[in-house]
Amino acid sequence: QVQLVESGGGLVQPGGSLRLSCAASDSIYRIYDMGWYHQAPGKQREWVATITSGGRTNYADSVKGRFTISRDNGKNTVYLQLNSLKPEDTAVYYCHADVSTGRRYWGQGTQVTVSS
Image 1 (cartoon, helix red, strand yellow):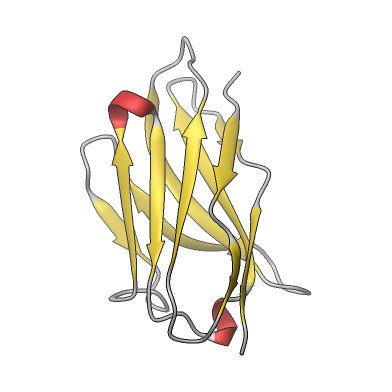
Image 2 (image 1 turned 60 degrees about the vertical axis):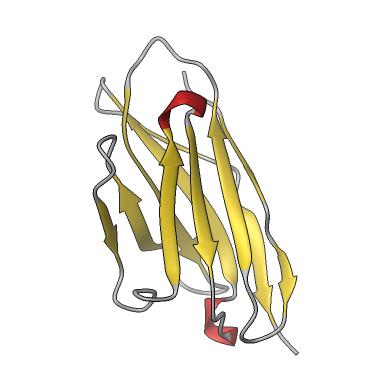
């Protein structure tokens, strides 16, 4: 069992920035990939970014150049730096952790609202 606790969401004006954090509890299982998805009202959950345990990153086209994913393996924490935010980035952001058993665990979600 892995518990993920997210923080850092909030209300920000267009063009602003936020930093999301997601801390995973200690686990007997090794954590491999970690990442973020978001879900806007009335839409399906969509992939945003992934980072491997070795630090390789991938991004959805919609966020490339604006969002940066990083992680601290010692703290089992993944971060998402959101810059140049747009109203269409408004969504609940969920982090995930993939463990050695092949299971994916999810955080509870944190709301990001981009509005003037």
